Image (cartoon, rainbow, N blue to C red; front, side):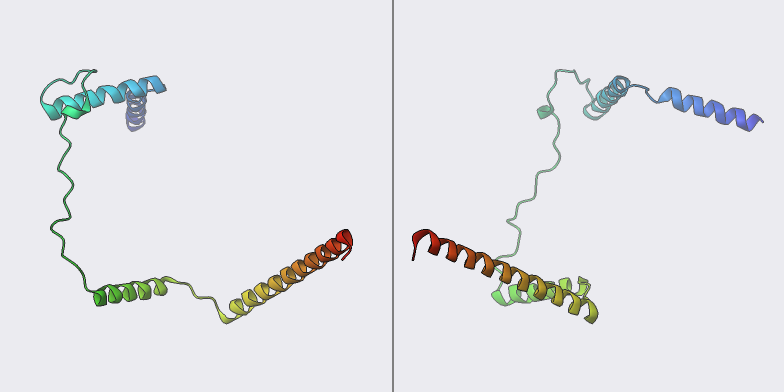
Length: 133
């Protein structure tokens, strides 16, 4: 029974430690940020201080240390290696799926050709009727 009471007390402590409203959470974050700034810079950070005075870390490395020009043969070799690597990732369809997809495409293209031909014939007859040609 004493373990249950301890767990209840721990749960109450956790609830008390967590802010219940959004304003309380914002206030807690702001106080944590100012405490972190005090610890990092060694001096107190005011609300009016700007971030430009703080350390920004190390600069981005320059590209000057890179190797000079690469030969076209190396570029082609790298390209082909990358192509092979990407093709190994492809999930290739089975023969049955491939036949199904091919038939679907051929039927769709046939239907669209028939539709466009029909519209073309209608427009030709309409223009012929309108202008009496």
